[in-house]
Length: 87
Picture 1: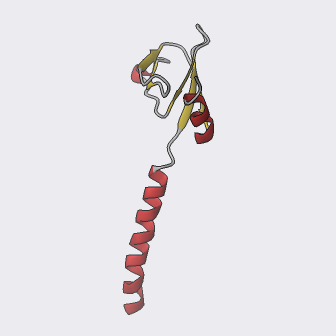
Picture 2 (picture 1 turned 135 degrees about the vertical axis):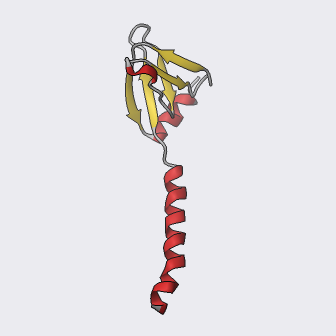
Picture 3 (picture 1 turned 30 degrees about the horizontal axis):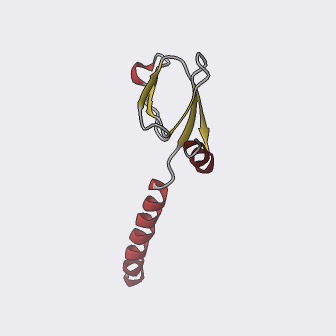
């Protein structure tokens, strides 16, 4: 019984560390507007109404964007960083 009591704080510490690590590992997306050919990069996608509409904050301009038709693909953190820092 005494041995399991010593493991409890270690287990809680490991779980807290894992949660902090996972919080930093978000998703990154490239969003293309097929009508204009414009590309956007974002960390979060909303799908209001579920009818194909997507809403997100563009990583380059920091503008809120809503598209009726789009192509969304998940990308790496490095790719996201490269594209939002392009001029």
